[in-house]
Image (cartoon, rainbow, N blue to C red; front, side):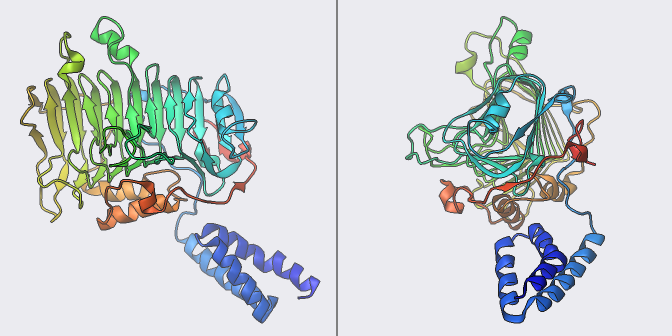
Amino acid sequence: MKEHDRDLTNSLGLGWFGAISRRLSGRSILSCVRSNLQEAFGPQFVLACCFVVAFEESALWAGSEQPRRDAAMGPLGWAAQTKGGRGGKIVRVTTLAPNGEGSFMEAVKTKGPRIVVFEVGGVIDLSKEKVVITEPYITIAGQTAPSPGITLIRQEVQVQTHDVIIQHLRVRVGEAGHAKKTGWEADGLSTLSGACDVIVDHCSFAWATDENLSVSGKPFVGETPEEWREHTAHRVTYSHNIIAEGLSHSTHRSGEHSKGTLVMDNATGVLLYGNLYANNSQRHPLVKGGAWVTVVNNLIYNPGIQAIGYRLPETLWHGRKFETGRLDIVGNFMRAGPNTQRGLPLLTLEGVGDLETYLSDNINLDREGKAAPICSKNGAAKGDLLICPAHVYWPEGLVALPSERVAEFVYKNAGARPWDRDVVDERIIRQTRESTGRIIDSEQEVGGYPIVEATRERFDPEQWDLEKMVQH
């Protein structure tokens, strides 16, 4: 190939080819195709092909919205007042190394209001070191990373402070090389005591060996129920997340432990909105004694032996007056899968405490697509299931979607970077649509930890609305 031909092709045609390649999943395959065509037919032929592909792509984009690195945050619920890192300094993550200068861990530990942006994309192997967020006023903006975004593996994230916004991250814990039942028990993400005004939106959690995504904390700090509620996690919103494939017979010391979301005793101000729960055996969520929670417009696929549960455990509350739980369950869609127990209800009351609940416009379908029970009381439960005619716990201004629209809404919007999903999220969405997803015991059953090449791109704050963290 002559030098001037190479220059012409690269500047006019292959630039288009490269741009198009970056928008398609088979980037390395396209590079090989380009190379082979160039070798066999010469640069002019490749140039012509590139213009044809460019024309087709332009026509496709003209009829639809072009991909953008943002997705609208959902209803904020009781966490609406959170500031996150708004107005703070920009902290740039420039390396996939778990620690050191320019690392995600260093960004999290930085003091003061801050917006964490990413100038690198790929996998951050935490090497079993927890990410513990103790410094308040932070926004973690995974949408700023170049494709394929940011995936954290082999450990969990803990939030132990206030005013935290986390968007567009993937957390895939996995067995991390541990043998079965050896006590490797890691959540994907959990809010602990000290956490309040927290929003986790458009993130993806899978392969946890404890819960995938939880609201936790010490439930009995103080003397009164009001003090208990103030000192455990409160005002927490989890919206538009994928919460999937909690590992079943894995490294948890108790054996089977595939769990979605646990909301601990006395947690309040909790909103679970527009999430996909797929292939977890239990806890979609499990709400514990005295907690106040709203569960709205979630898609639950292939729960095992429990979907939504409420349980006040007598052993934990021994000697204390039982507090009544409050739970609004509205506009959710549940569909049984291959691991779902026959006749599984959407809501099950367990334990010894009473629950006030409002149930409206929920769909529960069995494997044959027939209506299944909405609520039930476990045979051993000693509390009362108090079904109320109106909302018992509902954030101001929230408008629920009709349940028949929930599945498509969740397929379109849930998880990290829905405009740029990775192969794991794509598979989970596809298998949920097709009713082929199953509960798994190890990440190795579905391809193991992701392996992707690191990518880099300078973050330009002029291209972003730093108040809402969306592109201009």
